[in-house]
Image (cartoon, rainbow, N blue to C red; front, top):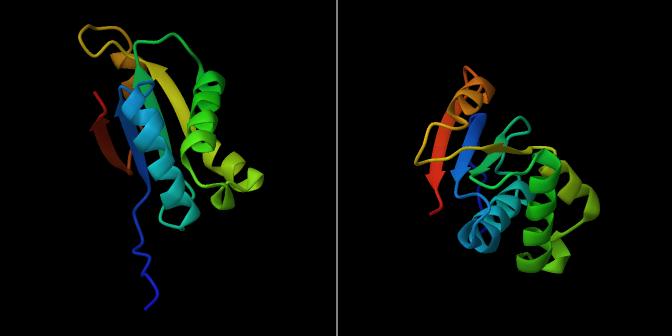
Length: 120
């Protein structure tokens, strides 16, 4: 029996603690596997968030390294990895303070599912 792909509505997924060990070893690789399986809509976005100072490019590199380290080689087609990384962004937010919340709010899209994962 072939697995069924259940369509998912467009979403913005914010991963708090997005630079941590759990995000690197489990969350980002798992999201990439869902992307490879066709279970992530084309306009879905993954927004990493943490206190670390970095930009989108640096976070995409972190995600690339996580995929290379924790996803089996047969799934890591360079074009597929690049397409996934186009959907990955980073916003610095101090979850215990006030820094970054306005920027995060301004980057969240209207009319899509907003999901928040606390990878802490």
